[in-house]
Length: 466
Image (tube, rainbow, N blue to C red; front, top):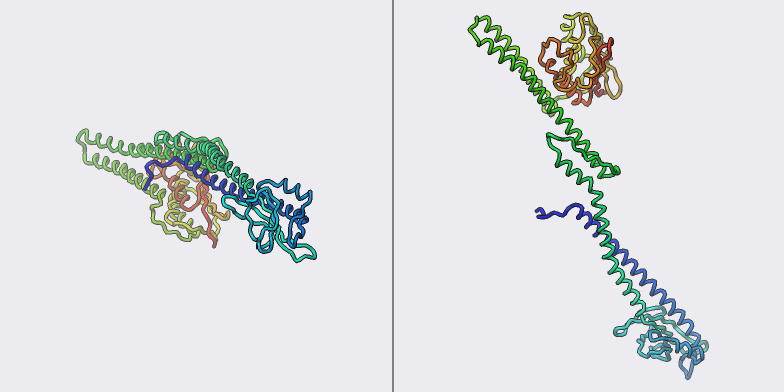
């Protein structure tokens, strides 16, 4: 179930930051509190132990029992003791034998062993140190118990707790304000992404984030978003150009059909005239059929909707079969076809698609090669690929047309002036289809053309081990 009012990510980041920081500060403050408590108790135990050792030298035997020797030092020590400090001398049974203190209301307990311990008396807490005592040559033994009230330690710990309770919320408040500010700065590119996405549409994809910050996660996301918009803008432009070119290509034969019909129907004619008109219209309809079939074929290629069955293809056998089909066209123009193909080459691909690719390239080579010209077909290994080059010595392609040859419906000016005998080549879809077939095989097609040298198409396809 969705929240009715989801918190902004900036606020959520700040709250999570405060929760984690608060837990860390609590753990750290608790650690400091325990360390301070341990240090204060250790200091108190050391002072009590020292006082017990000093008081031990004043223990004597009087009237068959242990007591503190009455000396100027002991009297001075007794007067210097305050209300929260006492030195008591106990028998083995826990009886109070003597005491140096200014306060008689001090709790006593029969020691169970030497060392420090804590005892409580109503609302007061005391820290005591027990030291066993005995006199040389005497059977009297007992315990020296030095006690000090824990109120100073408790006051120090309470003051530390109050500082934590007051400082921790203030620290979290300042950290929250800083975290909210930093989260806002970190997420600012995302706000620009949102604004850019909202401002982008099919009519205008020129907006960009243009992130100028570091190449961190947000920076890389902004760069990826800009790159995506570049690809979308390019794709939209290609689709718009494709739509316009397709409409233009379809309008030409349709206009011709309409003109022929109107001229034929403008007045009564002989049967032969009607037959000639129908034959001309049949050619235009054939052109429309070829054009629509090519468009459908290209669309299926781009969307991977064609049934494909890859297989191992021997390169030499493959091109020998293609050349057998294309040689009659070459012989009509007395074109010589030379080949240089290694017998051990093979690639893994879709036979029907590759036949269409190379037949299209060979057909174009024959069309643009002059009479008595020459075509050279080579295939060589350049691991991990096979490089197939198709060269003809015909009229070179102007340099400004080379980057656009594989665009749909694109035709160089020389191609527009020739007599179009086939709808596929005339519509400018043949090389676009060839490029898509190469992409399906993880390959590519490139073209070079130089004056007096001719034109070379280079097809790169992944090789398969023999």
